[in-house]
Image (cartoon, rainbow, N blue to C red; front, top):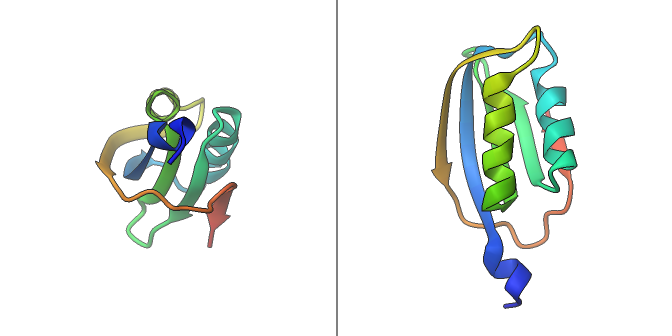
Length: 97
């Protein structure tokens, strides 16, 4: 395992609030790619949005901060994260439907 691989972490996260119908998935995808993260984001039937994010701990923390800040449309009222096993060959950040 190389040094870069050791530094990677993966988190599952669930965001609640005004996160559907406001471009939240695209917002998460663009910010994740900007921060060099890979993973996915998906709307859930209960109105929440779930995601898995993989990269450095610093990049993941920066993404959580950006999600909390939101924008003029996005208002996050809750964000719960939990550590997950790393995915070996994931390289992109996708919106799942």
